[in-house]
Length: 251
Figure 1 (cartoon, rainbow, N blue to C red):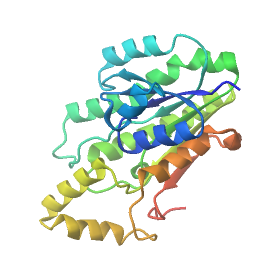
Figure 2 (tube, rainbow, N blue to C red):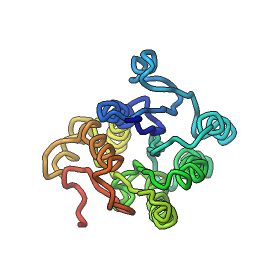
Figure 3 (cartoon, helix red, strand yellow):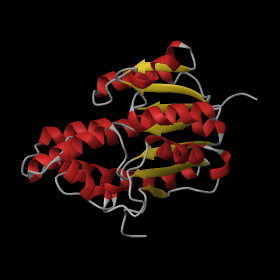
Figure 4 (cartoon, one colour):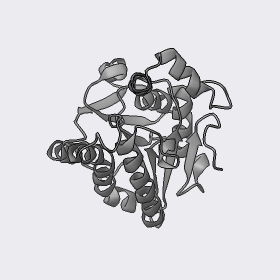
C-alpha cells in the first residue's frame, strides 16, 4: 500500500519535530518545510524525510518553495505549524510585529492550503491540521501579538473546515497548552523578568494552574496530530482540541 504523503511546516524542532517523528512511526511519507534541519537532520540525511529550507515569514520565498513542493496531486495532508511570536504587551508591540506574525502563521497557512486545493479536489479526500495554541481561546498576559494572531487563525480554520469539508477534507486544530519547548523557556524567561521573580518561581506558578501538575511534552501533542491525520478521525471536522492537561477553564 502506498504511503500517504504529508507536508509538515515548522517541523525542525519542538512540537513540529515531534510530529515528524510520530508521523514517521505511523508510516506516513513526509516533507518538512522549515528554516533549518534542526532536530530532524538524521531523518533528512537517511532519506526518510524530504526537506525544503524556507522562511515562512517571507512571502516570495515560501511561494517559490510551494511551487517546487506541489508538483503533483499525491498529498494526503498538511500540518500548519510555526514558532510563536515574541512576547510583549500591546503598548510595546508595533505594526511590524503583527505583520511578521501574520505572514509566518496565517498567510503562510493560507498559501499552502490554497496551493493544495486542486490536489484535494482530485483525490476527493485529505487532512489539514493547524497547530495553534490554547491562547486562541484564553488570551494570556504579555502576549498581545500571539493572542491576536491565534484568534484569527481559529476563525480562519473554522471557515476552512466548511469550505474544504465539501471536498471531503477534514480541517482541525490542535491547541497546545504549556509544553516543554524552547518557546516555553522564552516565555518563562520574559515573564519572570517582567515580574522580577526567578524563573523557577514563575515556572511553579504556571504548573500550579494545570490540574495534571506538569507541563506537556511535544510528543503528547504530536500523537493528537497523528490521530487527526489518520482514517480513525474521519468524522472529526472543524474541531479545536486543547491538549493542555486541563488548564483551559472553559469546556
